[in-house]
Length: 171
Image (cartoon, rainbow, N blue to C red; front, side):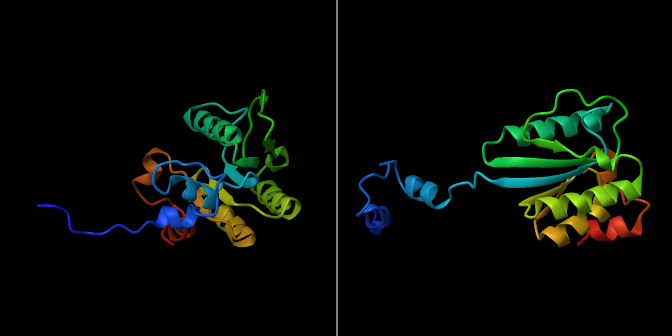
């Protein structure tokens, strides 16, 4: 039996007056025009350690920061580490590694707030460890940016010892 439905020529309507638009199949060209990625995304990353750190979480964080820096849609990554036991080595150009955060919890919080104050707008806040979620939540509130938590291993399986962190993760 033949199909009896009808087709709506949306693509033709949208592209009627636009000769310079790509003639890609379907609505892809039109969707790409509407959803142009911003070339100026700024990301705030709070992490335990990364460059200058040892172990699996530090390696993951270095890989994450490098991937973000290589994304053409990202203009700047502000990374605020809590620890840096070794020299950081080579840090990609788009990454600002805020070493004033080293030296304890108070220094970390001050550095996060100073980064927010000095850079203004952020498009995303990434929290690299569940124990940093209270400060990341504060950063989310100040920047009005979405918050992404990266959970590692066992911390994703059971509640932490912090009631505040547990309640923030569940919001």
